[in-house]
Image (tube, rainbow, N blue to C red; front, side):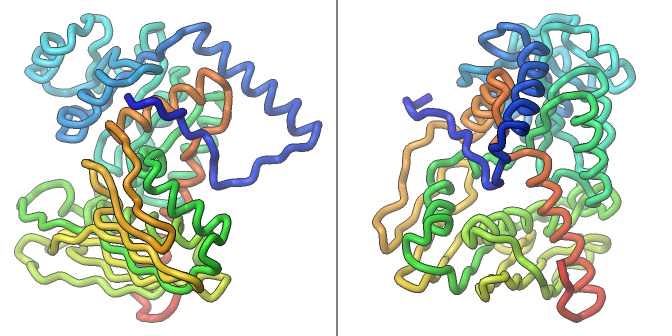
Length: 365
C-alpha cells in the first residue's frame, strides 16, 4: 500500500481525564495481551459471497497488519477452492456447525462477518464469545436493539468490534469530514447524496425483507453516511418516501428510498438509496463555498472538486486500508476508526426512516 499512515482519528470525543486514561490503558493492555506480540493478525472470513471472494480476499493479499488465515463456509466446493487458491490449512476451514471451535485456534485473531444482515448479530456474538475480535459488514444489523446487544457482548468479552465502512478510511472522505469539523467553508447549509445501482436478480436476499433486503439497508446507508459525515453532526428528524417501480421483483422490500434529514444547526439533506437507478454522488453547499464528489462511495476510489481545490487523494485499496487500520488499532489498543457505535447510529436513523414512511410525517431520531 502507499506510504500513508493509517488513520486512527474517530468522529467521537474520548475522555481524557486521568481516571479515564487509567481505564483506557487497562483495557488496551487486555486487548494487546489477547493478540500477543504478533506483527500480523489472522483473519477468518465468514461467508464467501461476492464481497469476500472478489474484494476482501484480494485485499488481504495487500495488507501489512493482517492476513487471510481462515474461512467459514457451508459449501464444501468453496472450501476446497479457497484452500487451493490461498494455501489455507485444513484446521482453519470451518462450517456453520463447527464455527464455535474457532475459539481454540490461535491462528485466527479476527472474525470478519460477511453474511446477510439478519445473520450479523448471531455471528458477531458467537465470534466474540469465542475470544475473537470482530469486523462486521454494513449494515450492522436489522435493529438498533440487535446492534446494542452486539456492542454489549463484545465489551463484556473485551473484544474489539469494527464496522466495515471502508469509505471512512479513504482520505477523500476524510477530506470532506474535516471541512465540516473545522468549518473551513463556514457552516453546512444543504447536502444532497445518492447511492444506487440497478438490481434485477429475482429471489436474491436483497429482495427479502426479513434477511435485511431493501435499498435502504443495502445502498441507503451509504447516502446516509455521506450526509452525516459531510454535515459533521447528527440528524434530529427525518421524512421519507419508499418507491417501488418493479413490484414483480421488489414485492417485499423497497426498491428506492428517498429521505430528508434535518440537523440541529439548521442544515438539511436530501438523500436517495436505491436498486432502481445508477447514481453515486455527494454535493455540499456551505456558507462560503461548495463541494461535489462523484463517485463518493465507489469501490474503485472517490474523487471530486471543492472551493478548496481538487479532491483526489491516492489510495491503493479501500478494503486493505480499512482492515489494516483496524488490525493496527487492535494491536496497539487504540480506538477504532469506525466502532460498533457508528453502525448503531445508522440503524437508529434507518428505523426512523421506516417509521416516517409508515406515518407519512416527520419522525424524530
